[in-house]
Image 1 (cartoon, rainbow, N blue to C red):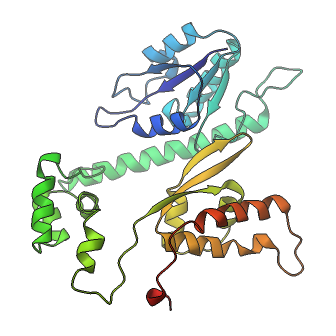
Image 2 (cartoon, rainbow, N blue to C red; image 1 turned 90 degrees about the vertical axis):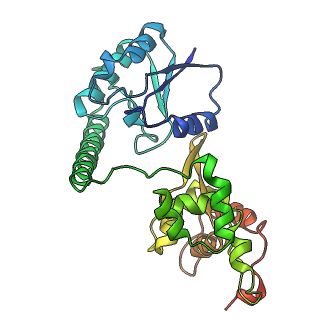
Image 3 (cartoon, rainbow, N blue to C red; image 1 turned 30 degrees about the vertical axis):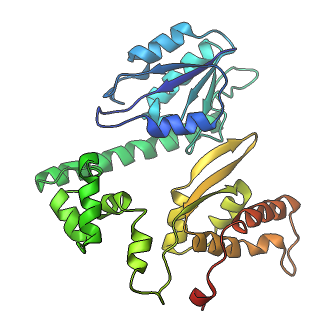
Length: 309
């Protein structure tokens, strides 16, 4: 049984870095990779794409097709149903490693009729419609940006050949905003280039002020993440969860969260009810998940006493 990986990006300005990360973390054994040329539009029917066609020709019954997210393969309703029919005909399994479809078995069929289960079809059509709406909104936003002579999409990073000069003038007192204007990049791009300098430099001459904490990546058990998503979190906490990377672990998952240590501590405090509250029964699996996360948070350096209020 072979593991077949399919990758695609819509423009030649994009890369497969995120797809590579998700698929590498999945630990797929002996993968055979089929990657479309950069710029292969999602408007082109999947069955008409060169590399996906090669994948279907190469595949044998019992093989598994792996994709990082569903929308790397399809977007529209009919595209999804066409692909599922092709996979069913070839007796192929489909594994999606991140996104809304990752917890669903899209190949499930009725044991008697062989038809796609109605619940699966409903979810597929609903989520595909949401994907089409997102695409339309993105397209409209790019057109509006072009009308204002702005370029859509993420602004570029600081060029590698200018990084040293940027660091030098920053230490001489130039502001991040001024550097961003001069280079035509975002302030975030400048901060990325200065990441190792900023805490030390902003702390210089202000010995009584706290040194900013650098972000730390911790694995949060899925049961903790699911619980926290029901909470009214503040913007920083919500952003940390939303930007986390899902890593599948058998039937469950962990969320790889990158945030400042204080944010991890706040999230840990939020899920205290998983240890049990008066009148509410304790769910052992949830309590264990919270304590696993607590053990990881406790490995972080303690908050300095001077900064605790």
